[in-house]
Image 1 (spheres, rainbow, N blue to C red):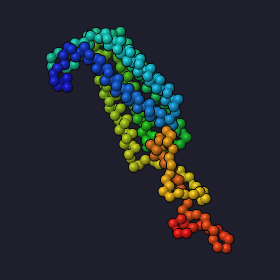
Image 2: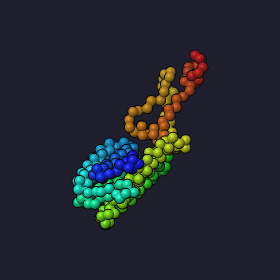
Image 3: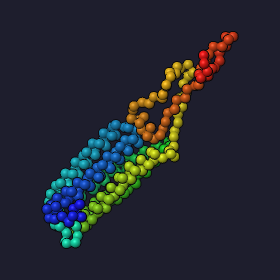
Length: 262
């Protein structure tokens, strides 16, 4: 709206970098939260791992925002020449912002390690069992290499590039976070709705003496692991016999179909 209306002036340039960084943080933290939930699901709802990752995530976010605010407070900017839209930085802070990229890269590397470890263990022990599992692994690794490349570029740029070019990679990083984060959700949604999902079926054969009440339905637990199994299309089917033992004339025994009267 600012670009289209032509109201991009000096008053806005004062807060331009706060808006730019704040929008990037919101996108990035939202996708990182989704990645942590994926890792939580892959590790069968391991709460200790979830708490550890959450603490690291909060520490990461707090440090990143603090460094950004300290550095951005020292920025000086001016509006671009006529015919262009945007703001140019004429002076940067103490270059604390470069620490943001390495902090991000460290946490992303940790999440990538967890995903790679689980992928190796699962493929070694069980092979490929679910399309959704494959999507979780593939998208998480693709996301790491995509964003990791951008973060590495930004980190090296802040260390080596001249002052006028240190922000050159910011638009690409924002675009990568937006597009990559959207694909993380869309690919998982597509896989969950696919009719080609692999289904692991287990049968629980109940003894013939177990009573069956009318309107019986399979019962599912409310645990997190059960919900994860449902998401992976791992269904538990209980098979109950359609015949029951009856006493027949002559002292013997036999089977009678439940649908028959008597």
